[in-house]
Image (tube, rainbow, N blue to C red; front, side, top):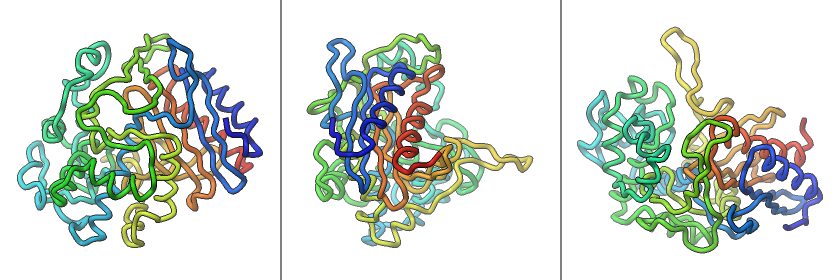
Length: 377
């Protein structure tokens, strides 16, 4: 553990408490601000051996992959190779149709800020039955093409009538964005992420897997209750799995330090010219207006969403900005003040829903850190 931060002891107490309260195998957190840098871990990387977690570990970051895809798209827009006002049909003609969907009315911008209305393929009833519960163990190595993921999403009704009329989180939109990157560049999305983000920032543990199912290099075991909501639900080792179910929407592997560098670069505008930086942080409310005029949250309460990035108002009144995501096997976030002067990155190597909700626990740790480093209450 690095103890160069004056609040190291208090931060470690918060992390230990979260792991104990949330029945989490292991958790890592790293704080960076003008007073120093601190890394701490609690729990274990491996329930079988008791091995401790450490800073160099790589883990699957789930939807924190989306800002990688969004950054590549926005860089292509800055180069004049595409426009956020381009329709999906311009680049993927005829692909998006049926169930009220029209690729001629959905733009690249709609894909990036989840206002397209296209159904999230992860919520498809048939696929969810395969990718949750014990059935997941039978399908953990299934390979999905991007076209197949889009097809699954499109076989369901739209989330709302017209593109731009609301916000409903859709992995399908980011699969389409990744496909557009490959169409525009003639290269793989993985290669573009490597060339445009990983190498320029000096990220040492970040990559988008292809069809391999094991994580390269040092990593913790990843655990899951496979969407069971009971407090005493059985926990499974889900470390080895196909990343093709997430790809541009959730397939990336990274480290706590790399997430810091990437999120900080986004907040500081180091990866995008000013016009595209404004587009990335053009935030929308995360919900829809109902027919009776009332508002319905469709994502995490107290958030707004841009192009792969989001803001989150904490209970202490502080609004933080950054990236985050969940996958079968973990939750990861990198959040900070808008000027990136105060940052925290966290990962827990389990996803739980119900009694010990991993999202709530992640927020608890993030809030505890910002209460300490910003002295808010």
